[in-house]
Image 1 (cartoon, rainbow, N blue to C red):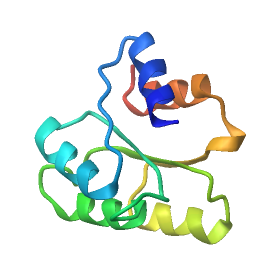
Image 2 (cartoon, one colour; image 1 turned 135 degrees about the vertical axis):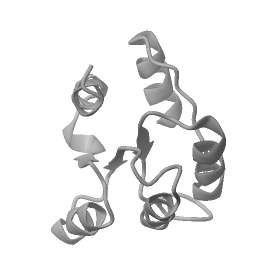
Image 3 (spheres, rainbow, N blue to C red; image 1 turned 90 degrees about the horizontal axis):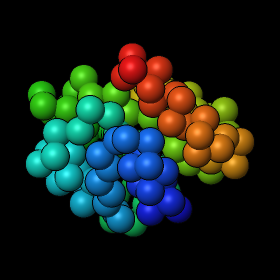
Length: 110
């Protein structure tokens, strides 16, 4: 699924990088300095909530917009994501990749 989103964003004119687990995601965020991060909650090694918490604690990523893009749609998960500093929370099953691209453009004011 991550590869499909990377392909969609590349086709829309974005540069896209991906990581396959939470630790790799933190490393990529530190080295790549992305304009925005799409973050799943369910990941190996470090879940998305832990990654988001660490991103918000680091000076170089504390202001980077993060959209949680996951299949966890419980109100408590959405609330937790927002409290940790997510810019938005999308349930994958409820949104098309095109809708996610539109939201990214809105967040980045493109």
